[in-house]
Image (cartoon, rainbow over all chains, first blue to last red; front, side, top):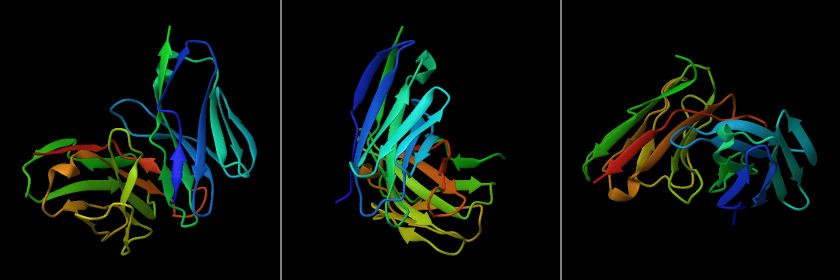
Length: 109
Length: 114
């Protein structure tokens, strides 16, 4: 079957760094997406990885290891506005997105 | 309009009633999707359309139907609502249905079936 695992909740301190992990098992693989979703709002796109390695985009970076079925989202210099859920989604062989349940990130001052 | 709009924003519906959730995009995207989001679960695909005139079933299609008469609109119909269809429904679109195509989401419809 197809499955995405990510932690349910994480807590971090303002100004710190946090890493949100995601493991996936899909029928075929065409890339890994990360989305941010604030409470009561729609998911918004953060990053896409299809090749192994780290993609950096400002304070956010995303890493992929295809051989391990593993990705992480790294958030630096945390701000209170980063409090949100972070959704991991893997694209399968039919180009459909298989979604994790999301990681709720709580930022404390 | 910029992006994707959904209507209504929220709705309380009696079980057994018929309901259509509306979705319109102005980005001329070929592919459109309907998801439901329930607490503790990931987004689950209900139906999708890779291009106008075609539709396909996702992971949880039972009790729902869609149509794609043109590029911009992708309505989702619940023929006879049941309480288990209480959820937040998101419509999304992407330029195409291939690799690298980012999905963009509408604001969602919160549906409660009593």
